[in-house]
Amino acid sequence: MGDFGFLPKVWNHSIKMEVKIAKWPPLLLTAAMYYSANFLIFGSRRSYPAAPIKNNLDWVNVMCYDYHGSWDTSKTGAHAALFDPNTNLSSIYGLKSWLSAGVPGNKLVMGLPLYGKTWKLKDPNVHGVGAAAIGVGPRNAGVLLYSQVVEFNKRNNATVAYDLDTASVYSYKGTTWVGYDDPLTTTMKIGFAQALELRGYFFWALSYDYESTVSAQEILSGEHYLSLTNKFDIEVCSHPHYCILLVLHCYCASVKAAAPVVKAGYYPSWALDNFPPSAIDTTLLFHIIYAFLVPNNVTFKFDISNSTASILSNFTTTLHRKTPHVKAPYSIRGGGVEPDPFAAMATNASSRGVLFIRETSM
Image 1 (cartoon, rainbow, N blue to C red):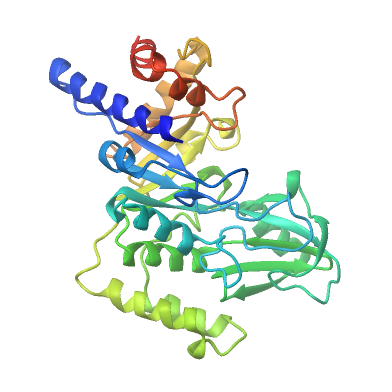
Image 2 (cartoon, rainbow, N blue to C red):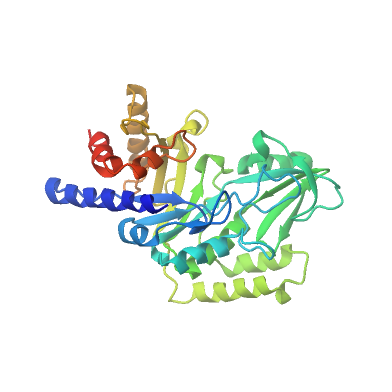
């Protein structure tokens, strides 16, 4: 992980030089990263280099989701749990680890998923978070987009329940179980981010929403807490997490809590046919991020075809025509690509900055 620290340092230096020489406004330099500053699974324990991240990135998009999924079919899970009484797989743990590592809250942006994870229950009568399961539920790899969750709930008249231990929601019908976030739990999480004085929040991904009902959520309101009290099936007033959220609500209502600076959403390139850029509600967000562009893992150059160039131009033009002040950055993908171009860049001093910057600026 130590080599990774060279990348933001070299790239930030290049941006500053571009501003100095070309007199252009500075580019945003951000990165989407693991929910925790420390890697707790997949090999030996290791940590992100906090200092170069803090000193060179505008902010970090912290991926506060995918804590549970198809890799563990033995039990259900809240895949974007705000809290978890039993493990470190929670957003509160991850965000606190980033803060403890030395990355300040104004450099952290909390990720919010617009999709759910599904399991097949072992016993349909035992259906809470952590209930025994025997496999994944509907759809590809046990993933339902939020729009599909809404459809599933309506079509099957599914039972919807809230889990205060994790600050999440789930629905079930028969042996099918879906864990996700809805407008209420999303609002709670945004309020939590605000109370921690984070830079803001982002959604993955905008095309997964149902009529922008989740991505339209903003800061906490008293009405949401009254709704929360009515929806939970336990004595919420005595629950420690509810007390914490009430304190956060009071804090957010005070003048000390700053409004989010970053309200962002990713727009996946594969959504183009069913959810064109013109369908995005640009009034809800400050940053709409095109995902993804992938550099060549040998030359580190973007091999952009004429058709892709046209798509990118239309993306930016459409958004700015609708809302001139909205920012439309591009996301460069490394993770999930084999071999990972960023890993190759980071381990080779000659390619960390000069080669990548030269090729991407052509």
